[in-house]
Image 1 (cartoon, helix red, strand yellow):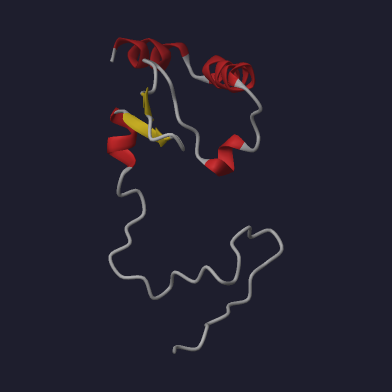
Image 2 (cartoon, one colour):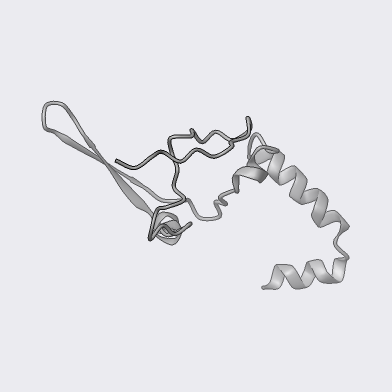
Length: 101
């Protein structure tokens, strides 16, 4: 039996020490990212043997925020407000070019 490897984990890190993936082979960050964005289905198996299937797809115009960005924005309204503030400081010539793309 192998000996467990423990790393120093900060209090901010929510990963438990027993989840050591440092020796994991073939793991790729974002491996299923494109497929997830394209849409996915979830199958829920009930105790009685029935299967419930739900399909999920991001709506047109939806944006997925990274966790470090998401912690600063509670909802869509706060994201839109911040982006509108940035749009206001972009020179008008650049703004017109950006809208035509």
